[in-house]
Structure formats: C-alpha cells, structure tokens
Image (cartoon, rainbow, N blue to C red):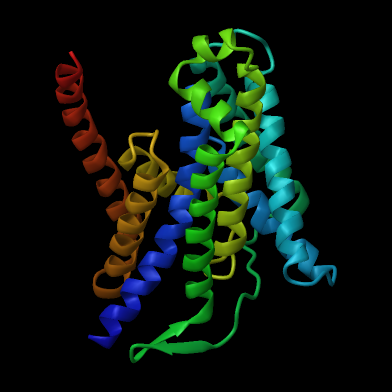
Length: 286
C-alpha cells in the first residue's frame, strides 16, 4: 500500500508537468484558435537554459526564473512568426508552429548538443501520512496548484485576463469594443511559452531533458488539453494528472517501454470521447 501511494504521488507530479504544457496549449488555442505544436519546445528550452545557468554558478531560483523568462520570450517570438501577418488563417499558423518546432531542434543541438541534461532539484525525502516522498515531487505539485490559481485570478479579476477571455468568446465583438485581438494573440503565445517554461524547469530534476523531449511532452500536454476540450484549463489539469498516474503505474507495475504506448492510448481514448460528446453538445445548444 505504501508503494502504491508513493507511485500515486509521483504520478500526480508527472501529470502536473503535462497539465502545465497542456494549459499553454489551451491558452493559445482559446485566444487564437491555433493548436501550437511548438508548445513542448518551450519546456525543453527552459529546462536546457536552466542547466546552463546553473552551470555558470547562478543560484537556484534566479536561474529558473531567467529560464522561464527566456521560454516566454521564445513563445512571443513564435507568436510573432505565426500571427505576424494580419489575417493569417489558423491552419497556416498551426503549420508555422510545427516548422518552428523542427527549426528549434537544430538550434538546441547547436547550443546544448544532443545528450540529455538534468539538474538538481530539492534534495531529500519527507514522510507524509507514513509515505516517504521526494520533496521535488511535492514542490512540482505545489507550484502547479499555485500557477493554476494565478491563471484563474488572471482571467477572472484582471482587465488583461478579461480582454483575453473576450477575444476567446467572440473576437469580432472584442474588436468592436477596441480590444486589439492580434496583440492579445501575441500575449497568449507569450503566456503559453511561460507555462511551458514552468513545466520544463520543474520536470528537469525528475527526468533528463534533451532536444527531442518535446515529443513526449507535447503528447502528454495535448492529451491533457484535449481532456479539457482545448478551452478549459481546470479540466486540462485533471487530464494531465490522470495521464501522469497512468504512465507511472505502467512503469511501476508493468513494462516501462509501454509507458509511451499507454499515453497514446489515453490520448486516442480522450479524442474519441470528445468526438462523441461534441455532436451531443451541438444538439443541446440547438
């Protein structure tokens, strides 16, 4: 029972990373209607940047904050490339994000090489209800909860958040009342990059990160975002946690090589479930 609870907490922590990546996808899709395939790249850039900054002797905390800032700037640049031309269709912008993700491979290998990198996190264990837990896992869960609370407050209590929500609900009406929808799209990409960066610096102490780690991250993040219908961050958090628990349980009680397969099965199942729900929702709306 103790091992099961330990694996359960580990799964929740891993799932929180997926949820953060998924929330970035949700933020961009809600505002711009674009599925950002470069979202996993933001996490990789932040994680690799943090390892370099720590290697230069910068303290923990400042190094992670700088790495997240770099990821946010990369997100903004991706948004400028994808949405820079007024009237760019969502499909074109999606293809641009895919191209940016592939281009990032070359840049990351040029800067950091192709070997996986990791960095130290919180050391030691603590005992919670008789279950020994690594402190880094608890830190990941705590910071993820704080991030989602801040996101909720941002969208519900601030003018910028309400402007972003207005753009998501009705871009035409938002434009009529003077909101610059295109600028809100750039801000959404920067927010997506920041959320991806938070995921990257939290995951790096748990598993080595290399230039191609974005594939596993984007699959997990996409599954979480699909669980939330690409529009609801809170459900994306739940989807990410369920996926993380599934992956860790497969590694613990099954075959570790089937963990990615389990993630894909989870993703396909959620997509079929969402496809089955949407016609029903449209009928109810009509």
